[in-house]
Image 1 (cartoon, rainbow, N blue to C red):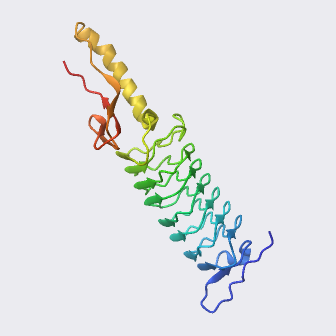
Image 2: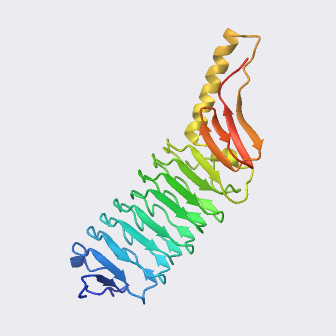
Image 3: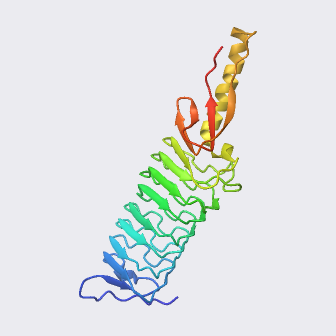
Length: 273
């Protein structure tokens, strides 16, 4: 697409985006921008490497943010996406100062690595249906996530490396994600999972891969040692215990435990005789 961007000659010093991409000679100097009312799509690489862009005003009529549109806008701190329906791959990748994004209730799809390496602290996605591979990976300040009951698919590693993540609210549905997709890989602080919407018996796949592996190793180790110590008293160890009635899972010293109603899992990693 040809460059239709306004050359930024407004009296208020705000660059007016009218489509296309920002001319290269303005990428280092643009600090504030506003999307013109005629624009519905922010196009491929539109603001890429606008490293001094601090803010941009996006009206409710903007529906699509194309790939790499704001990639490497390292000074961008916050953005409001009220009317956006689709955010394509790498759209805000490496926006390292971006800590506040207001997602609207029209957003349905977030592409691969769209918010990778951002400074987001919490995420609320009221209507999103698809979250792409690595979409929020390596968001090292992210602590809280709320996902929609309408969610249909989370791709591989969507929250990989979010080391401060403590809580996530999400539905459990068949085919929501694969057991091997490392959804929460390196999310070592995750201690609470709140379940929203209908609850299905796919909860085993929710457990962290690292936690599952550690649990299996502990069980194997205990089963090797105990027969030599108490051969007549086999240990009572259960990998998974399904408990009717639990909407919330909370991690404690005993593993994931029931704290309200519908479905829950407890890992009994202590042995009693």
